[in-house]
Image (tube, rainbow, N blue to C red; front, side, top):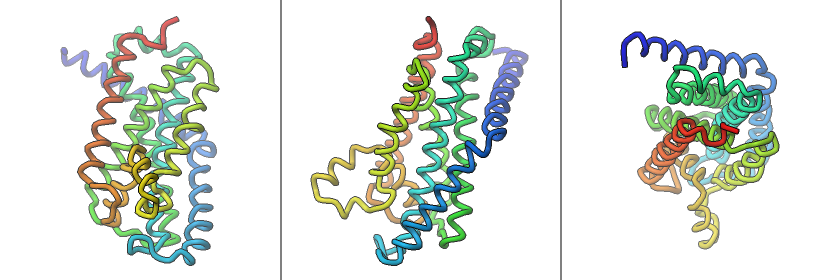
Length: 260
């Protein structure tokens, strides 16, 4: 690739990222504020009120135990939602076709949309973390692992959101996965409890839930405790991210779900 072409592609990527960030920052009351309010309610109800009665969970205060899960839940939902609605809106308004016929390689288009989702996911994660600090102390066992888990999880669900948007034909299709798939998996992903509390059969079933591995990997990076082997958890996160990224790029390159 010639230097001039590389520079042009980077400019296109930068412009797409700026567009994505500007979009969700312009409507911050709809994209950032809801997660902040929801997290405050979770900390008040599950942390302060119920947490004092529950006591310890895996050797730590209950409110500290749920903090990693609540942060991860916010990152997952916002990264996914940002990309699925942004890309589907571009697809619905047919301006995605202008991007696809431009000289910009599809991988830069893909990375531009994903960057918007990752940045929103991380930003909301920071907001929830700041809110959590008003309720409890948050130890960090490994800063590098913390950053890596948050980034990979945001990237994974940004990519999943883009794949959902490509397949979706209506706005109802966009809402099916978050409501009927993502929400149940998140709440059953060990956010509020340890799977060690479950009967053997339900513990085994829980191991099929990929979000369980992400929540536990993040909990391990902060608190140093996990229900899942950390190497297995990181391997699954990286593997799923690579698979979804390649799938999304393949679909863009072949126009799957984009050409009528």
